[in-house]
Image (cartoon, rainbow, N blue to C red; front, top):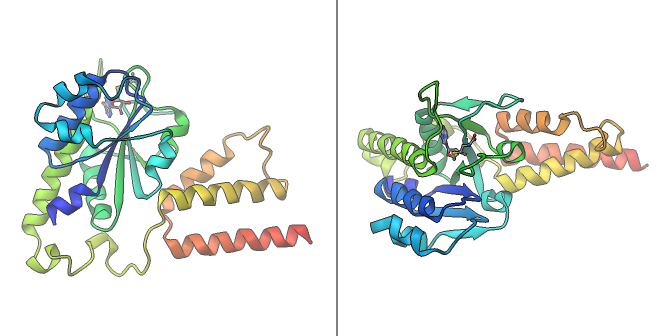
Length: 257
Ligand code: SAH
């Protein structure tokens, strides 16, 4: 159903400085039918300014959850998209905002999805961007294409609603009752791994690479970033993840012999 699917999509704001932007983001969400707002170390929150700027969406501000770090806020998500205006040194898979919305709706029919937005002054850090499957940029004026934070949230929420309405109005009644799995997951036998599984996997992988002297944490040379990008691109399911964890454990046993 449209509402249930949109309810599975979380908007995450990282270290927002201005509480007005939190309120405006909440309003952008509610007008499009989203209500799961998560804040990572906001500078000034709770705040009357946030509530005022939210207008009729003050309920979204009131039930916003605050987390200490981004990774914990993403733990249960099987798809994470970063909204980012800039291309970084190590290029990451990119989606147009509309493409990211369509993909998000696929995943949100079965689990949690997050869209991550950065700080007003300096956006998202590389380590934060690397936690995400995709990056998505709103194409704008070449001379200046940085949107206000809440305006960027509005663009993504609009794409989500527009595509959700399109999808649910054209679906057969059986599909919208939840009788079948969404198209990209049809014939797929396993659930996709969530963010927390993936983080445990990366820790295990790094540990093994150190044990077999392949990786020197003192001189990392982007190794873990590149491996993270590789496995994010593959979008592992739970069975594939368990196989890889099993291989890592077998390697460790061999090394310890
Ligand atoms: N000065 C920052 C931009 C901050 S704008 C920088 O150089 O990165 C605050 C946030 O709004 C960004 O981190 C991003 O999540 C979102 N945003 C702003 N403009 C955007 C755009 N054109 N495309 C995608 N996201 C954008």
